[in-house]
Image (cartoon, rainbow, N blue to C red; front, side, top):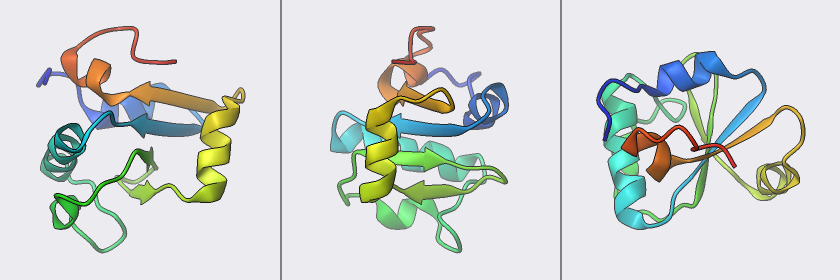
Amino acid sequence: MNDKRTLEDLRNKYKGHIYLRFNDQQEFDDFLVKAESEGYCFGEHRPTEFLGKPWDIISLLDEKQLAFCGTVSHMAYQSGGNNVRRVSYAKFADGQNDYLF
């Protein structure tokens, strides 16, 4: 993980919807730990409460909030519209600049 790159930097860089994609459980669990260390929450829940629970896409919201993506969010993610930013968390965490797809 590139410790200088933060989720808040990502949130502030783009307007609209930001969706983070995870390739596997370890990547998702690493994200949960990182998100909690930056003060992010799923509503009233700490991210690490969801360690070990599989999920493929998370929405990065304003005010350090996260959301699990259901059917409608998955459709928005797949659409790739003008205000939708799709982020490969692995590339983002690795410090690569081509993390958008």
